[in-house]
Length: 150
Figure 1 (tube, helix red, strand yellow):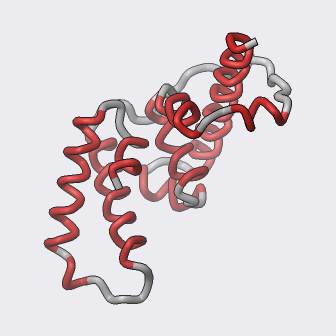
Figure 2: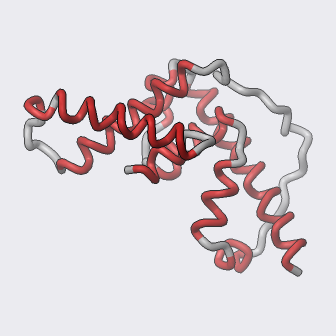
């Protein structure tokens, strides 16, 4: 679960604080678990919601960075296969907070844009545009990594 927290923060200590808060909520609400799904899934949802509450307390909401004029870069499939999981997570962590949160919720956790919009208090279209911009930024970072490696 620490890995989940790390995807929503910039620093390990912050992720550890969120994890601790989340487990306090788990223990406080363990009697409410209804055995309708997996216990791990229930805990994961609490951890994600705790991380999102922490995120919403910050003033980073709806970061806007203009990427509209940045050209779409074609990527060769082997570029993706050369990335290690750790490198990819490091790149994702370099995204601006708004992009990173939406990317994690959509691409990693599997939430829909409607669910993301409800969780973050934004429009579905904002969720979609943040995801598109996050993907463009990641593509650019991957291309730069590939240039360095060659």
